[in-house]
Length: 458
Image (tube, rainbow, N blue to C red; front, side, top):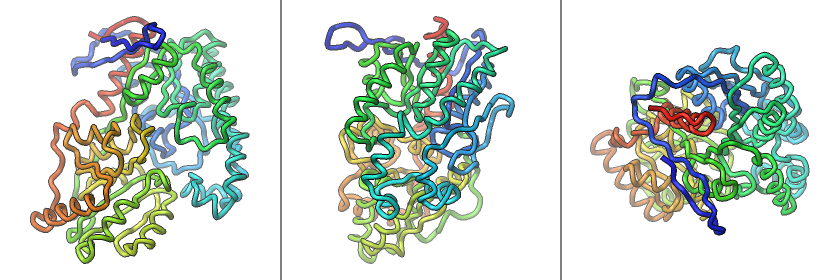
């Protein structure tokens, strides 16, 4: 079904909202789709999880898909590739971040701590120098050195295979630039997925002159796009308003087949085990309110353990020491994707960190959907008007709290429940309805057909 927004000028803005039932049509003509995505399995990044699952499910639906991605990425190779090897072409790329990696101690160290945030920069490179380096060279992002290699690989594929459409997923937005060039060169329609906003991304830490560059580059890249995909309604409204192109929301999701059946004990039967998997963004998404709450609990805090798994977690250790609770907090190295899902299922409570900023309102984190699949209650720390917080509330997935005193009060309730029942109740099964990656991929398929061919699944 189509819904329409209005620009201030009064002209209609195209929005496409698609809802499918479980009886997907068997009469849909299969599409040939060229996917351009720097992030792709086996390289373990949250964007690669989404892209890999999307391609897997579209392939299972009968579509002929070839993927252009990049080799030798600075992250662990622990994601399973769930489509035939021959359907993915991995290319070389020029790593313009290499000087920074060398300063950090080499590629091997960066694989464990690849995201250079404020704390790391202070200890290795002056923040102003690094910011200037990024602002001048990361245009549109640090993967720009992949652009010519992606084009060359796609040119080889397109010599004897003509796709119906090109689908590019960003970040990095270099993927979108490559797709736009290929679309113009070979006269193939393309659809852009912006998992995060580009020029309007409030996480950007560039100098002001980059804002002008970003706006012009984004507008040029998306000038001939046939459709736009993003992850939430607020972001979709921004994109539809800017470009007046068919736009839809494909949320992240969970894959039920990836979660193992639990055997044996949970992390620790005695304690309330809170688990966080992923990165920490100091000053934006960080666990300070939780640590303040644990500090205020006094002797009752001995019943709680907080387990962090991921990269660049030194800030968690420093904050735990600062609040005198380091004996309650354990940081762990990155673990393979499916192992992280197993750890999530073993948790009593899953910790979600949201940035306390109004600009964060339209941002879902893919981590939330992994947590939904794990069926454990979520403790989200951040603004209650964030769409992630609203999803948690509406689906009864847990709590979103900002105030440390309120967090402490909720922790006491969970501690008592754990001591009384030896477990914390799981979230309702119905809370997951419609949020599997397969269901979201079916919506994406419908959008492709609507935009490119005009067909509607029956």
